[in-house]
Length: 487
Image (cartoon, rainbow, N blue to C red; front, top):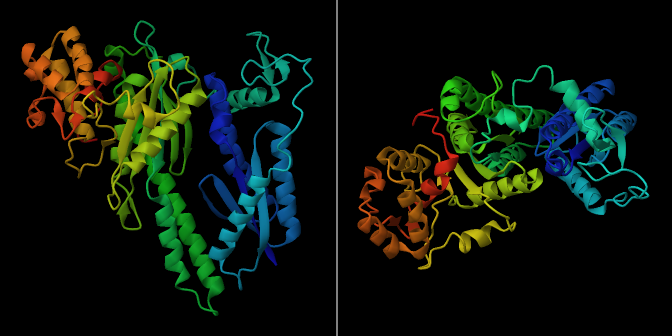
């Protein structure tokens, strides 16, 4: 009798973004990659196992007997507990006979067992320290190490992240290793952006794949169909992973080619270092950090490239959430905002539409952790209209007025007209008052040229209850145009 074993690392984002020190974020992301890919595969091979599937932050392995499954789980657990303190993970196993059991049902039962284990959390409470030790400056946990160079104290968790950073990144990495490597200009508004990108309709695709195989089973072919399903599931994961990595590499390539242009545009670049910090790039889950001024264009390039690929007869789409904050703003709160923005972009897509969208938010003070409340109050005019057209559509097939290409044209037109900055920024105040006030302001100041030919149907500055210029004017100081219409 064989065994299926699932592993899942919990609270990955909290673990990665707990600190505002980029090298700890980098080290944490490398640890996550190591314990979800390299380590389990190494132990799987050691204990005669077979990788079944990966996705959604978890991986499933098959072992021929209980001893191999148990030894794998013990070795995996001990390795993490010893090397990576405070990292939360879960394992679950159950029996599986490939000749009699339908693997679709077994995987479902395995995840149900894992879910119960996560809800129970037997060892969740523990004594952290006795109040007589130095505190880690990053995690506020008891310090176990003092760095001589900086004089900072670090907990076991922070030290493991720094050690991984030194081991994996420092000598060979081409991406930004410090905030200053992102190109942030100290004489400008020092804003960075965390971008979270997540694939659309992945659950529906998996469900569709699962049901297509369920209909193939007969009492005589269970083992054969099980193998076919495993192969199809792995191919699905491989195709998704390849498409997202290719899109990321395309984005990186564009930024590399624009190095001189970005410097002339005000970014303070560090030699050949790419001003992007990859944090997560696993399947359809992507997170990276950039200077705020290139964040929107980077996401646009990524999503445009991604849509060139298809799976199961349907193009691959995704949504991006971009949180733009001052560089000292807490990383974890910034990530949470980017994740919320990504979810908001997904929720805005009507049922049946296959498209990608971008949403962003610029934090210029304290953020109250409620995006909907902000959009329904701060981003509403006094006459009940919407200031923002976000989320914006990226897909080329769309001709909606909230398409990203029109937003780019708005910025291009505003900059090309060379209008007095005070008049342009003064529009923000009138927009908040409502459509009539904005229309009057445009007429009094004779700045109809701020509306390009692509906005001929919105001479008042509003269209269908939404302001067509607010997004562009608000983003004006946080935007460097990078890509052409076609990328």
